[in-house]
Length: 440
Image 1 (tube, rainbow, N blue to C red):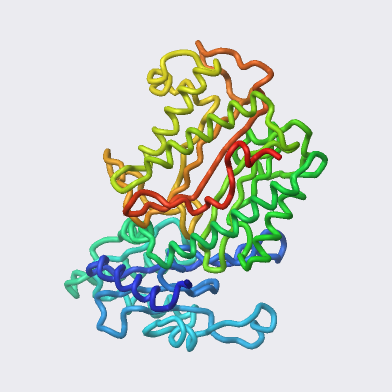
Image 2 (cartoon, one colour; image 1 turned 135 degrees about the vertical axis):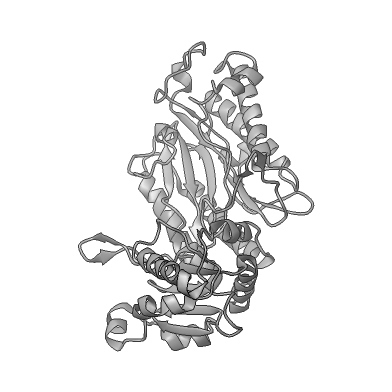
């Protein structure tokens, strides 16, 4: 099930209704150089993509609820240009922006400065994200300043500059059935890649060789590629949360932690972490910690349901982890007090998950003031407790020194979970995680 132009149109209509009388200026992404005149592969800005489905650089969308019907959705795009297209590929141009992407009107991008003031005239406010778009921001501010200068004579001006993010991100947080299907597809491809990686991993291979197997599968299945820098971390490297060097040799007796997911052509993402013994057998200490992390993850997933919150999920996993660490002798004291003091953070230093969607760490609030955001059907989050035993962080005063037999063990288990009316759907269940499945 694909995200059609009709779905983008329905999203725009909902956003227009929420804007009230404010005009929204939503820029797309630009190309970014990484050395000399070479550019990174283009990745469209997620908010812009969500509303437009238009996948070319430098575009700007205007959503104008104060204008008459037929003048409310304007796109500024790079026009068709044979010379540029010979070098860089096909462009839809202004005609394609109207015919294929539903714009009421479309103009060449270099006309934005000239046309923007007229389009914003009559709006009660301007919805624009300040601080993110250095080429567009001066044009918006100049247009707004001109309105304010003319207000004493004309009697009207946009009264404020507001961020569109709260409205748009609340909309993006609740996934439609079509979006859930795309996330299932990203989860399927990502889970298959993890299963392949576990089959090929063995002592003597490099982390990068395993990474190549994973990312080859992403591409073969039609994804754009990895959703983020794949983490393939053997042994003590797994205790570095965002390890991406991926250049060490896999050692007999170590664990391999893989945190990797694909990004589809329409930018929906998978995000899975699995940890397993490279030689196919857990040591006693590895098994103890793996079993504990798995128990914490399963308990956390079990509380995912409408009315719960991301904080409930984190708190559930954290309590299981801390109680288990006390039993193993890696922590000392009352679990409730240890959690309150944060005395566990040298072993578990991150939250248990995040929203997932068009962005891997997807948009949407976790709290509204003092109140946690309640989970609702259509929300998708990761559940990813872990333990990381190393000398990198000092052991808190009063806690036991870490014996050598535990050091260098890093474990994380992560699944993508959709909230349903009945509870939860584990989108990534095809990536196995039981103790028996991790051994061979």
